[in-house]
Image (cartoon, rainbow, N blue to C red):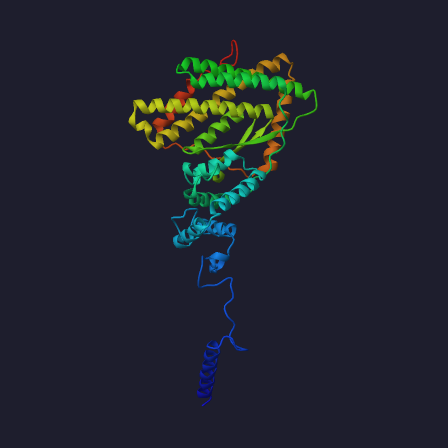
Length: 403
């Protein structure tokens, strides 16, 4: 009997609610739906809540679209397609849609710049995670068709972490600037010549200038106020990013710097003294150009040399062998100068090495992982080793790299 009474009361209450809904203007009647969040119309926002599209500011609509694309893996065509496409369509329909997207992008780039993301690093991560066409969005949105790619770019950039601040660098002096200008000229000629012997001679002269200047500068600095290591970041571009990072590391070690490859962010952090850092970047860039030229030459002669495994192994072997030869050059130059200076050079260089090591530990800790070279094609490894041996890295009259 109790159950039937309960059912009758529920039916009575239901009829009363229905009558009230039919008289919305009477006191005590059900409230009319108010403008604002609703689950029945408009684009979907955070938590699945739907909004009246005409009451959402365009900039907020852009951010909602970015969130949807980010949840879909950074691609409008993946994941919750309907949500991302509808939101982008809403932005496209707004008269201020393009301007709002451009404004959000500009603000985000400014924030990233303040957290260590230089423009070339941003461009590289966009190229790596999306396409080269998306990099153009970073410059300007030329028409409404650029809104969808721009939102994809925003989805990638919005997830980038802030980079740890680099130690402040000391400006290079006038003498160093003159030496580096000469090095730039020599390496530019080495990259442009079509004669291997001329390229070898120019690269050797550049290495000689850098090695000798670094030693002279270290001796001079030891008698003055001590320098502190600085840092810079280099983008590592695909393809074969691991092998290219190995080449950076080889050149760094030979020039008393250290490098850390941050794989997920497609960049290498260099730590060392400023003039050495500039030299590393210059030499790395030149050697990479020459390595690519040798790799293309190998591909012209052998179709199998165009395969990815061969090329990766080639560049890895090139990096390892170039590192060995550069370090031999540096060691030979150090030995000569240390003898001339009565043993004064080695303690100075050791102190500078310790300072660079401390800078690395302070930024990254002591848990860095060493990634050995990967050899997927023995022929590529042998060819890369041979190409590195062709570089004549003489460091001065009567001195020649060995090993």
